[in-house]
Amino acid sequence: MTFATAPGKLILCGEHAVVYGRPAIALPLAGVRARAEVADAPRGTGVRFDAPDLGRAWSLAGTPDNPLSELVAGVLARLPPGRAPDLRITIASDIPIASGMGSGAAIATAIVRGLATHFHITLTSEEVSALVYESERRYHGTPSGIDNTVVAFERAVWYQRSSVGAESGERRAGGQLNASCSNAPTLQCSNALIEPVAIAAPFTLLVGDSGVRSATRLPVGEVRRRREADPARYDALFDDVRAVVLRVRAALAQGDIAALGGLLDRNHELLREVGVSSPELERLIGTAREAGALGAKLSGAGWGGVMIALVDDARRETVRAALTAAGATRVLETDVAPRSGTV
Ligand code: PMV
Image (cartoon, rainbow, N blue to C red; front, side, top):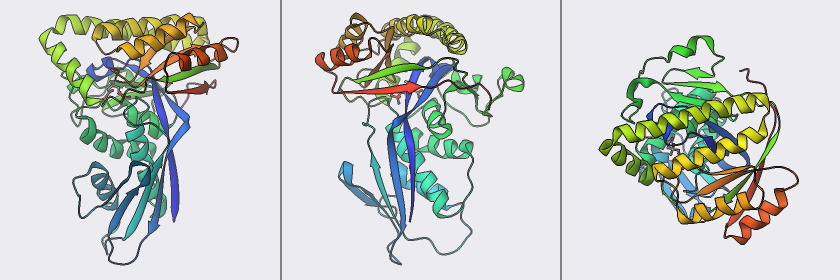
């Protein structure tokens, strides 16, 4: 029997614009994790999935088009030809689903890691990320790829899709390399530019869950429709987001936490203009700022899910209590440690 885990994730800045080729920065959220246990099963029983937290169980043969069935079939296809294995895959997660914390990518990553360990297959983080991307695509339609990337690499990443396909919000295989790939310390650079992010000073984020579940593909689809109707307006907003993300990278590299706060606020204003905030998120974000957060924004696809608030030690507990009083169903905390920008 083998056991593997994968973290949740947060998008620090750049969500939505990242679907259209602008950069975004994401962080792993190590405090909440998905877990997969892979065990040999009696001969002839095939591959069975058990997700007791979700009250779901299914078999690969019975539901081959389930995205996780396809994911497992894709990993098993890498085994040498022979008898199809009999397995029981048990999934558990403390990452709330449809909340912007990358629950789907984390579950898929834990399964891939569990299978790789079980069958002694060596997979690079890049390969894990690529396998998980395919299941993300089944759930979300046109994901940018940032979720599977940050979860598989498990470190703060700068993520920018190649310009090919990003224009239309579609991902296509074999995109051209971004010109900056050649001289940056990249983690991977085939369909996207993925760079480690340098963090010079520690900082703390509180993650407030609005309690409203929102499937990623809904706001993503609505943004696509709005952009198609008014490309000039949305491309200008996405360009403004890019400018913010560039400044966030500089602030992180310089350890300028005060500047980071203002930039998170600015990113949220732009997301509001894009149309992906919600009354519940606005209430939590306004509350966090009033309680002394250095900055706050929604994180992820929006219309529900989570918001993040940058806090210093003096205000951490005040902001946490204010978020709970304002209706946050859960408040998580993540301490982001300094790290160099080397691979
Ligand atoms: O899956 P979520 O809710 O964390 O949102 C993903 C971020 C988006 O930029 C909105 C979509 C994407 O594929 O990057």
